[in-house]
Amino acid sequence: MSKAQTLRLDRLLANLGYGSRREVQQLVRAGLVTLDGGTIEDSDQRIAVTRDLSERMRVQGRPLDPPPGFILMLHKPLGVTCSHKEAGPLVYSLLPDRWRRRDPALSTVGRLDKETSGLLLMTDDGNLLHRIISPRASIPKRYNVTLDRPLRGDEAETFAAGTLLLEGEDKPLLPAQMEVLSPTSAHVTVTEGRYHQVRRMFAAVGNHVTALHRDRIGALDLPEDLESGKFRILSEADLALVLPKAGSGALKTS
Image (tube, rainbow, N blue to C red; front, side):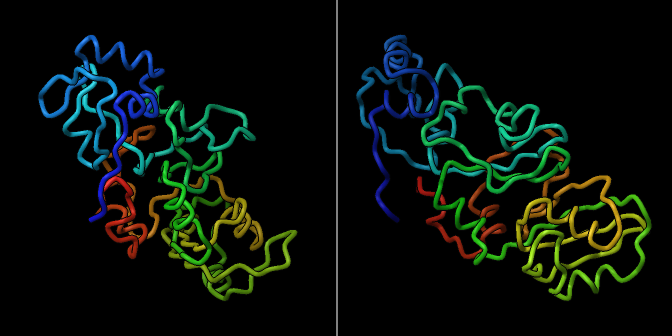
């Protein structure tokens, strides 16, 4: 196991969005930061940034926010966006306010458009983000698709062939899997992340997607008890379901 990074307390808490270093120093002087049950009196004390730090440190009586190097799952609702290029509130508005001031910043792992709901990952670990979205990783993503018109019957074969061309593109899609759920609904699993890919796949076979919901990334399912708009920090076991070969070094705070 690699040696944990250490940071000055004021820098650590400032990087986590608790305020400027001066504001953090005021919290410490007021006795509002504790570690292992004892009050920290020196804001320049160096702290080992371990993965269990959130369990051991309290700020104003509450557990410390996750240290750098974490990943979360968010149940993205309809109407919120992953990008400033789309109108509407950003997914970051669903997180604690101070998380928007974190350094390193949180980023979405890929995107879901405004009219797509479901499982969205977010992380402040750039290396981990790129490992997940890299085309070489070929991580499957499953969508629950609701259609405007009944399936005609040959869509699964067409998607699996690896020859389907989307409008305006000259490179065929990689094979995708489809499981029929009803005449107007299906599960579709893709390993690419092209722009509006699932919607455009059905447009290419003469249908229209009326609702789209992502419920799985890799082998990680969106929990049934995670309400829309809520989030949950991923454990190492959760991450292994997304990126099976990630190993113990995937979260850098160990």
